Figure (cartoon, rainbow, N blue to C red):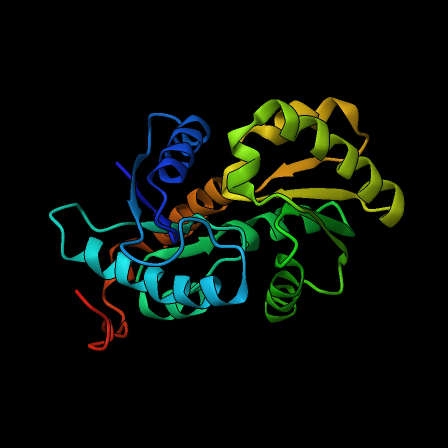
Length: 241
């Protein structure tokens, strides 16, 4: 059975549970999904400092999983919309690695120009830098935020739905985008509740992340057993095990 490792780069077990529940719903019973929570850092990533720490926490969580008795992961999904540690983990792991933001941007770009809506005002420059790094900035036409963080939105789903519906309308009208990403681990499942209100796709970043991770497993399978014979970099000795 394919093995998908879901890494929550923040320390909130509640967010990990939300991610795991939603990921299993998307993947179905044919995929074994396990989740691991960062052992240090912020309860919810919402600024440059917590984002920087989360990159290290992501790598430490991966090393911790490698040292466990679990089967080796075929794919790793970084469960934070912002993908802290993405490039380092892609370089270090033999598994297929993606993050919520990278996966959602890939999916959204298939429709054409796209915009992003997420919780937390400080995310805008972080996400724009990531889009540039991933060569997605040419298709990205807008990044919109609401003041509450994803964690705060998740605490009151009814109020969050009203706020996010209004923000989505503003983003679609302002940008003229062909797809809109609703980004954030804490917003998992909300896009489906908004989809019928809009003529453009509203993309759930967690669902997109799981779909891209499964696609990554399929691509690795096509390589056959030799996928484990490459000279992969070893985990850094600077990381705690």
